[in-house]
Length: 96
Ligand SMILES: [Zn+2]
Image (cartoon, rainbow, N blue to C red; front, side, top):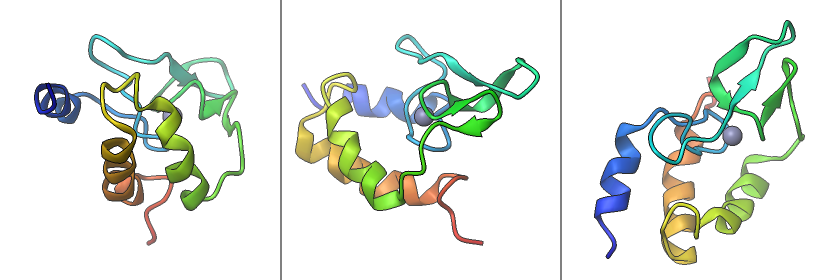
């Protein structure tokens, strides 16, 4: 049963902090800017009222991702692997 979910996952707009989908059938709510407008890059769990909701490090975010494995339809190992590959490429974590 793995595979299909992962392929779809790649086509959705994902949060540039946690890689959660912010488009697609299981989309999380979008984050909000300081002026209350929706933020198109981050989900509501990461970014609210123009600021990040936590000061997590990249390593902490990767470790935390296993909590969302079930939601993403992945095993914890798959989720961790996905996080290790994906999170460092996201805007919040990318090193200039
Ligand atoms: Zn997020």
